[in-house]
Image (cartoon, rainbow, N blue to C red; front, top):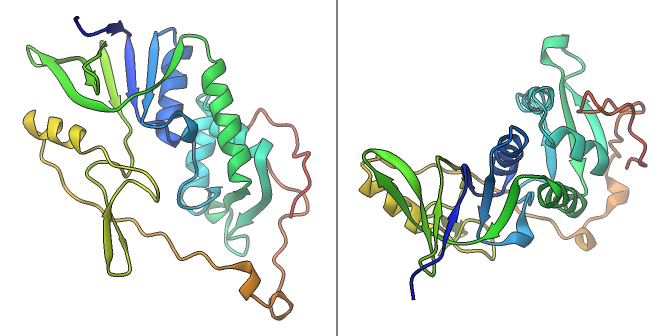
Length: 240
């Protein structure tokens, strides 16, 4: 029996912040698009920090929104606290940031992906990148199915041959409880790409039952929160 073949205009591999925006943008431009992820239940998952924006990042979210992206609208719906950082400095240094209900954010983003015309969400593990005459023509996934495409976008985040260090323990994985995509790294190596290793750190989480909150100073959000999206009139949900 031959392997299955699926045809798309654009394939996006990885369904985090970058992947969801890329897939939605392609689909809205009329391209038949596939968004591939190892786990369809983690689309848009906020792995490290349940927040959107911050210094040098909030401006990017607003630029994405101006181009028709979803991140700004989703955080406006699901944030639990908005703060404009660096208010003591000049306007050029002001940076919007919102802490999110990360499960609500993930649910909303996944719903938008699944509801988008021209966009198909696929739970697959990429095994190889297919190239003919110097051009990408598709990918092969675990089980040998072939996804054909005219354009391939890799938004794999921390999952390329990823290693996690917890104290002195070292394990493979893109984030806690999930695996890694070494096969994509191998494919890129075979195609002549030089790979480098980068590092990101996640601070330890504190158990709230071990904290005496009476000894701490409350830091409230902004009394009149400013939305991230230009399409949001005002923030309606209660803030923490």
